Length: 290
Image (cartoon, rainbow, N blue to C red; front, side, top):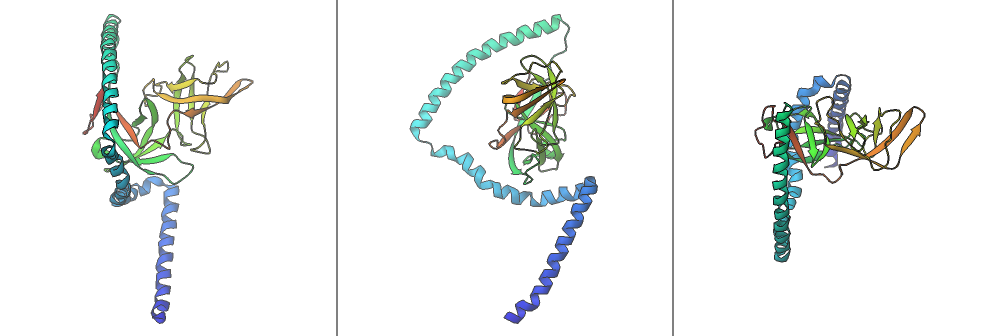
C-alpha cells in the first residue's frame, strides 16, 4: 500500500503544478487584456452558476419559509397594522393623484415634456467578491431577463450601483463604494453640484465628495442625491450623507467625506431599473410611472 502511494505522488504533484501554471498564465493574460478572456469568463460563470445557486439555496429557502413559523397572534397584529397603513396610504394616494393631475396641467400649460417613466424588477444578490478592495456583487438575473451593462441598480430609493458585466444567467454589479465608481451628485439642501467617488482603499471606507464650489456651504447632515448629469443615473435618488467631522475647509478647496445611504452588508435584494423608453425587460415585476 505504501509503495502505491509513493508512486502516485509524483504524478499528482505534476498535475497540480500544471494547473498552477495554467492559472498564472490566465491571470497574466487577463491583467493585460481582460476583454480577451471575456468568453472564457462567461462560459466559466455559466458552468459554476448551478453550484453558486445551490450554495445560496438554503438561505433563500429559510428566508422564504420563516414567515410560516410566525405565531397566529403576530400575524393578527401585523394584519391589523397593515390595514391601518392601507387606510393611510389610500388617503395619501388620493392626495397624490390630485397633485399629479395638477402637475400634468401645469406641464401642458408650460408646453413641457412629460417626465421619463421607469420599470423595476427585483433581483437577488447571491455572490460577493472576495477582494476586500472592490465592491462587486453578482445578482441572479442576466441578459435573458433584459439586464444590460450600465444599468442602474437601486436599494429602495437609494442608488446601489450599476451593472458592469452581463451573462445570460447573471450579472455583475459595481457598488458605489467600489474605488473605480464615480457619480455626479447634487446637495439636496442647497443645490451645489459635485462628484462622489469611491475611496481609493475601496469598500469599508467613506465616499469622497469632490469638485464642490470653492465657496461651498456644505455642512454635516447634508444629503447628496444623483444630479442626473451624464444621463446614466436619473436625478433625485439618494447617494450619501455627510457625517459629523467629515468636512475639512481649505483655501480654495473643500474636502468632504460621506457615508453611502445603502447598508451594503445587509442588502440581499436589489431593484433593476429600466427607462420606459428603452426595451421593456421580459420579467417586469413592478411598474411606476414617475
